[in-house]
Length: 75
Image 1: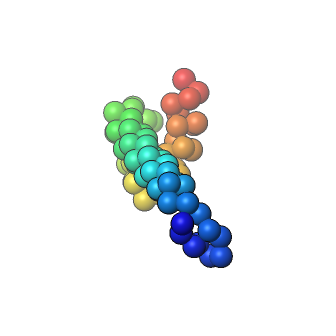
Image 2: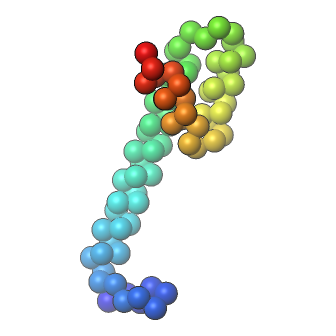
């Protein structure tokens, strides 16, 4: 049993939570990379818009979700 902020949790629950967190982090990173390469391959009206989306996808983690809904989802 692990005492966490006054709550006693079994070890398997802490391990399972860590594995879920790791899986979510890996999937989020892969999604971010996929949206970066999609912005790289997509033809925008201007080069500045293309490079801006590539930069924003790298710097702001949840910007890839915004990019997905604006460009990829609304085909």
